[in-house]
Image (cartoon, rainbow over all chains, first blue to last red):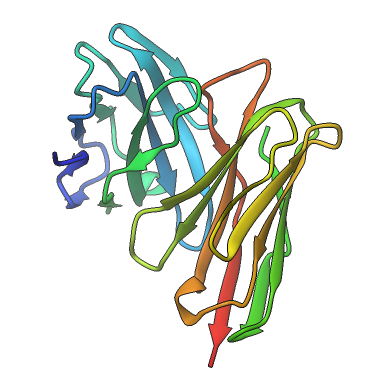
Length: 112
Length: 111
């Protein structure tokens, strides 16, 4: 039982490049979400999903795309990286309703 | 809408108590509390659902006043291991499953 697995752990991108952050969970959780955390700041919701085929925007969705083709996976795509997207990205999953969130270990992204 | 946490930072001596508050201007369905240590992922502490329920675990407990849309986290007889940043996350009644976090409260427990 691995919980929530994020890859990669570290990534450096050049401005304008695109990439996909991977998130997978093996707990059969319906709910998955992506947050970004800037230094010394709180967690801001980017996108979330309540089940396969269903996604919705969070607080800061611009510049990011998501899809949920399976229950297990919820990848986050950066379309054209900008220095403002330098952050630590956390994926989280939970059961719907009364579930609390399990967080992955994070991906530290630097855009130069 | 982002919940408001207070205070922003707290410094305690080991054994002292602390209260961290979380409030929202929107009607809430649930309040979550998490602790994050530097360089690590947030770790779940407890969840409180609409109904004014108070929950506890050893020396850490919380309450949820749904009339005021406020929650408080109580840390009793603090230990060095309690140091970290505490976040509350809220789900509003009109947008369930959308968990929005406050800006956090930094807690430092000194010997």
